[in-house]
Structure formats: structure tokens, C-alpha cells
Length: 116
Image (cartoon, rainbow, N blue to C red; front, side, top):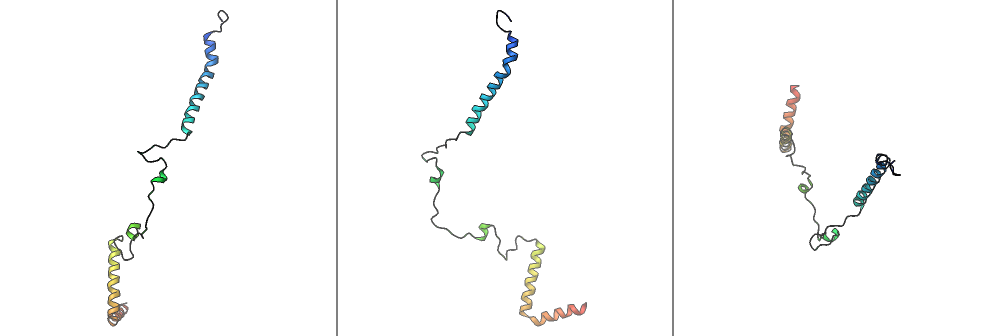
């Protein structure tokens, strides 16, 4: 202590942590208040900041097609593998043949059964 004044090092070690703590708290408080404040909406030209005014009302509606919905038709075989497409094609041919000539179809089935 010189002439009634405390030593500078003693003051520095005694009050510096409090000064740093005060500065950190004040900076943190100001940053937090800026982050949590409601933001003003940016104006786009002459339009109002309320986006509800920019919504165009629907005047008429239409039914979406299966393609627009991402749904394939029942007979659509494009999504199937080539082997599955071939099996479906063969099944269709066999069905048509059996409806057009049931006697010949029965004969083919009897021949398969006799071979076994």
C-alpha cells in the first residue's frame, strides 16, 4: 500500500473476476434479448408483410389422375421385372386360349397329368 492506496496487483486480482463476470453477463443478456425479440417481416415491394393476403383462392377443383398421384394402373406392368412381365403375358395368353377352346385346353391338361 502506497500513500493510502492499495497495490495495483492486489486490486487486479481482487476485482478482475467480478469485472469479467459482469461483462460476460451483460454481453450475454444483450445477445439473448436480440435473438428472442420478434423479428419484423420484410416487405416485398408493395405487398403487405401478412402472407395470408398473397394466397390465391381456389376457384374450381379437379380430380387428380393416378399418374399425378404416383399410383400405377392395375394393368401397368412397367414397374415389374422382365421375368414377372413375361409370366403375366404367358398367363394372359393361356387364359385367352382356355376361354376360346376349352376342349383343347382340357386335352393339354390330361396329357400333362398322364405324363406324371
